[in-house]
Image 1: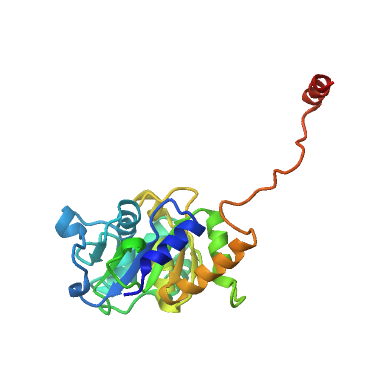
Image 2: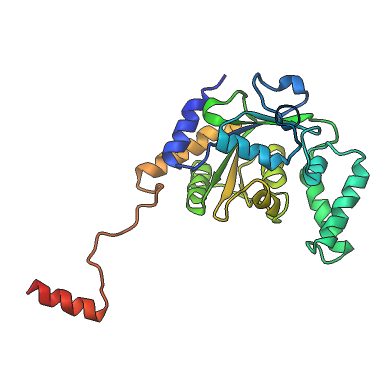
Length: 263
């Protein structure tokens, strides 16, 4: 297995995320879940959302596996190819978009669902997904997800573009953020993506107001780290080195008092 620990150490040194970068792998059978994988339905006694599985991995350091039996989210059920029957789930999601005013009318909902269909997995192709903290991962990941603030995200984009100059292109809807526009978009395009966590991420998975995410295909991780290292060496780094090497400017009263004190 690749030494993912060293890669995690590099990310932690160069980016300093508040939570574990997480390894993500889609599996075709639950037999591929590694030993000591925790499942919400069997190990915790409840179903939950895919984004909550990510939170358990990045905040607790657990390896978490999820299938249709563990999942409570209708959006993830549809996009991960777990819903039954799929046509009814798709219609229910379109209706949900209208009821919640995400879509102004049926045409808007139809357009929304067409975009979702571009990144969804084929029905039944993958039985589950595993999340594991990268620095002690139990899986060889398909991709790595890092939750970060905007400044850290900027640095990750620097890393991803440093060797090729090719810009990072992403899509944002504010819905199905980390599960669909994060994991599945990156898995299908094999490209790094900026991820805007959705409302569900924030309500149930406790993603904070200032948090965004970045997803990196596993085979992109080394170039991203090399790009981070190269720019770090020139002083482009995190925490951002602000310019404080100059005399401060004070309001008039303080300036006059400071001048009198100096004399």
